[in-house]
Image (tube, rainbow, N blue to C red; front, top):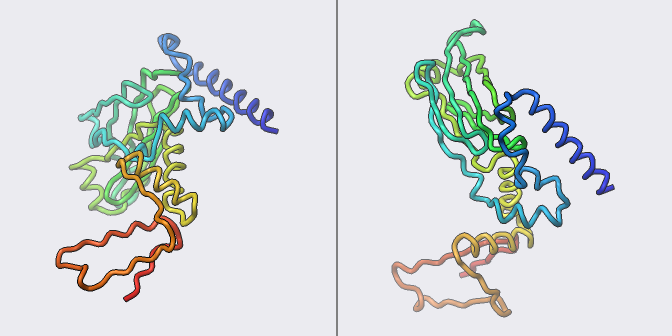
Length: 242
């Protein structure tokens, strides 16, 4: 069963590789056919998990602000995680015939570092958040049929549509989500994940106290300005009784 699934995933990856190569110019053949990090997730879990964990972490969930697109006359340029040359500009219109109109965000991607990578983006205003990913180097569009209200239209005219890049791409972001998920579960798995996260990111080591897990404090031991810190990792938690 596992070998059959692996074969299907490999076949799909090769098919995507072939189709994507047909849509790029001849200069793209100079790029690397693939990078091992792009295809790690299709390997057996025993092999891919340690390698992915060394490349990505929960911190990779944080997006990077690359700029804001506001008009065709102000082209935004930046270097992506996959595509090294990117341009974006905003076109305001009223194709929908709505009260405040809408807009089209144009994004041109080129110079990918491999045939199998992709860039993942988040687009936002104070009134909406959406996302998209790009696998092929060409001009892409993100259609916004109607602005929520006049204030959003005014915001885009003056501040632009904000663009955030997920530096780890699709696979790295999914891996980071998987790393973050157990941190918010009230399980022993969540406890172990929290302790490992604190040790790796903050250098903090927690040692289990010998039983009984009871501490008695008298009023004489508490002084003005004392701070009591409680770290709750599992559902059992800590009980405070007067």
